[in-house]
Amino acid sequence: METDRLIMRRWQESDREPFAAMNADPEVMEHFPALLTREQSDAMVDRIESAFDEHGYGLWALQVRATGEFIGFTGLAWQRFEAHFTPALEIGWRLTRSAWGHGYASEAARAALDHGFGPAGRDEIVSMTAVANLRSRAVMERLGMTRDPADDFEHPRVAVGDPARAAVLYRLSRDAWR
Image (cartoon, rainbow, N blue to C red; front, side, top):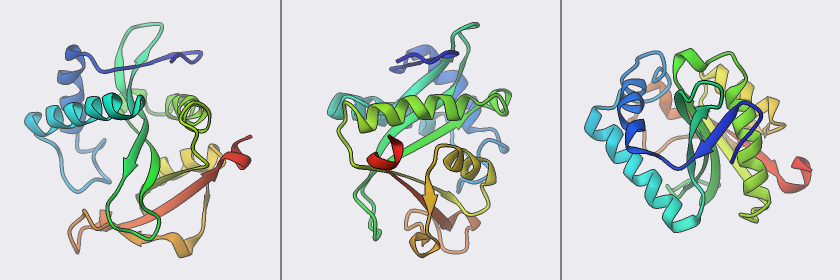
């Protein structure tokens, strides 16, 4: 897929090194439980690619059209951990610091939502993040996603006591997207 400024594509071997560097950046990973090692980062790429093989969509690698630079990912991923709203298709993103503040996450997320509500045929897509992740929450709100505080939850895959455990849930329906 392409947007005005981005190419959204399957992952390439050359993406692994910059992705690992991004996952080891404390600012990028501020609202996640831990930094990722190179091995953990590579395993995540392998899981992302498996999801593409299974569903035909997933977390697309993002490349700036003008420069060819890899800047992270945006896309769709199934969440199946135990919670009141799962299983659910989630839209998510993670961008390198140099890509922050340019509107890339919102631009790519709009294309991913078009795919989720179009070819993937979903009626609802969710997004979640740590309560304190105001940047991601702002993207969710720009996309028209809404939050009901009654949906907020303790993320079961995050350790008790970790600030990232307290999570907010945003939702978007196909009708609202139209």
